[in-house]
Amino acid sequence: MPRSFIPWIILILTIAMDLYGYSAVKHIVGNSSENTKRIANAIYWGMTAYVILFFILSISFNLRENSTPVTRFMLGIVLGIFVSKLFLSLMLLCQDFFRFINWGYQRFFIDPVNIDNSRRQFLEKLSLGFASIPLFAFVYGMVNTAYDYKVHRARVPIPNLPKGLQGLKIVQISDIHSGSLSDMEAIKRGIQMINDLKADLFVFTGDLVNNRSKEFPKFIELFREIKAPLGQFSILGNHDYGDYVDWDTDELKAENLKTLKKYHLDSNWDILCNEHRIIKHNGENLALIGVENWSSKGFVKHGDLKKAYRGTEDVPTKILLSHDPSHWDAEVTQDYNDISLTLSGHTHGMQFGIENKWIRFSPVQWVYKQWAGLYTKGNQYIYVNRGFGFIGYPGRVGIRPEITLLTLEKA
Image (cartoon, rainbow, N blue to C red; front, side, top):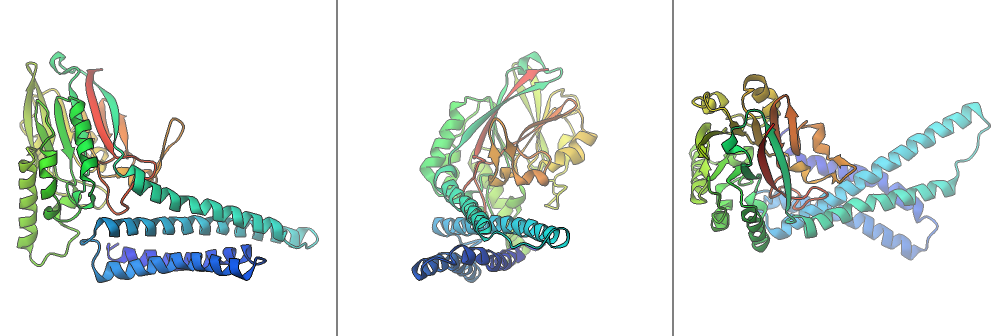
């Protein structure tokens, strides 16, 4: 589906949900004073007017490319309203379905009775209350969680890991999406958290920008502060190629990518584009392999693992950097079973979900089997980072931005 259709779909669905949801609001305030009815109408239709106004502004001023912190916050409110009304519509739909079943049962099997109006009103009020939760959650996610970095630690048991590599620490971040970031002090805190981990190796697994290389220069000095004794390495993600921009010429698009790669180097990151590096540590060799974006989910496929792998055959311990985790199931575990660990990002954990001791859920898991954290298949592992930044919705609900610390140990 073309990305340009998405705002139209959201608008049409919002209007459809408005008409359906308003029936419940109208029923709830049906016996209230005229003043209460006017206030309820103003709030309900005011939210709809806000969504439509933002939609018009986004088209008129191309806010996808020319966004500011204010317009990104406005977008977050739009998404919160959309999800809230979606929840309300789904709950009302369920109520109407069961009410219809109950009516049919009573109509054909028992003497006809009237549907309990007070019970219906109670359920509609309950639905309205639950539907307001996503809106508040989305606002909270923008204000308090967007830069609330969390360190996730994982120990990776690798068969036949040389003694010299045991205990090797790797810090990983992914999906910076610099075009969405604005809080420089928060980013500084995040970078300090990275350095405080005192890892041996730093890796960044793609999506430095949203669309254009010009988003990143103001952050170069900040990310240049990241230090690791064995080096800082990076790869490209699907957003880095400029595919979501209408370029005037192919030459401008190519120049954008060339500039972006230079910014990796300016940040003291060794960018791996279908190539590898042999890293020596405590007398042992580690092959760090980096591929360009490779996806089995319809995103761009520039990665060439065969090319990047060539020359690492004799190195027993191999780590792959590949932005899209769908690469792992589709190719890595099929044809390269000596790659012990793959590091990916891309999913962001959808920036929305629930993670605690009892529940671990995000809608993105319906698309990506490996969506956040450590997964294993045989003797191979993949770690999927939840992302350092954000895109689209300028915040996070339940899925905090991540800094990963991985420690290698012998299985």
